[in-house]
Image 1 (cartoon, rainbow, N blue to C red):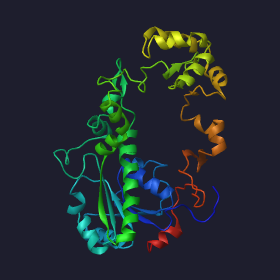
Image 2: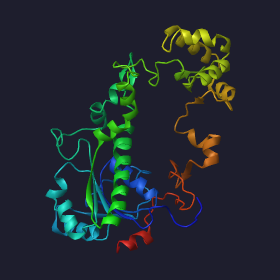
Image 3: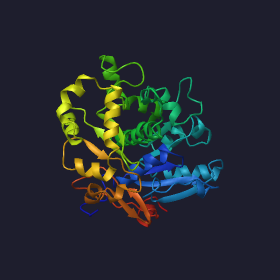
Image 4: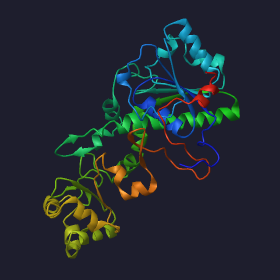
Length: 362
């Protein structure tokens, strides 16, 4: 990635990351990828085996403190005085009990944006309850909507609650509040609840449901694999192809590609979820391997793609052309995004930055 004017649009923004797991580090990664100077405050007794690479990339470095001691609290408050934002992922009230809650921090730095990440939010009946991604998306309507009539609800890894509805939403909230603070001179608390973030990701699905275009029961809609034109098909070599031919013109191209285009009208008339249509298309895909089908649909608008394993994505021609995945420091990783025409992004690194640390007085 070339240098143009800066190392990202958030260059100069300083963020103090109180070490946590999952969505907290992901939020910090997004901010640091965009150029923010992120300093991690870790535990004095650290377990290096619990640290996950890539998601902790591009930080200024880390300072390990014991927040249960006066010296540790004072060190955090000293750093707060130099920060634009702080992000933390404890249960409600923990930061206050440690003496570094919003009130204490705003007494030091009134412009500070205090970003909070929890599963349930800072209040409410479940505010203090333990949970994980699967629990949060269960109460958002998202989990119920994923899966088939045969599988029941299928957890989508921890992408919807932790990362999409959590870390990414917190990053947006922090950037928004920093922008507002620069105009008003006043900081504020950003209360990010993963259950609410997952709910926001479901906005279109709620809209379809409320307009009677989405069934109340699981399966039977056009996005969950129930439709023959929007699902994955196994190939002769045990690999898979993803078909997303939602629009009629794309469905026709898809059926042409598998050799049954002349049956387009008849197949559509049998309905999206006709089990016999599913079985017929499954049988066709099992006649050839993934490479054959990839080549067959290459350059068409049939919306058919090979399902790549994680160890394959960096070698795909499109990802190579864009540099979307690269091996850096011995690890294949997704590169920072989105892309900016003027404020380019720096390549990620796991090494501390002396320049960024000096901005914290370290």
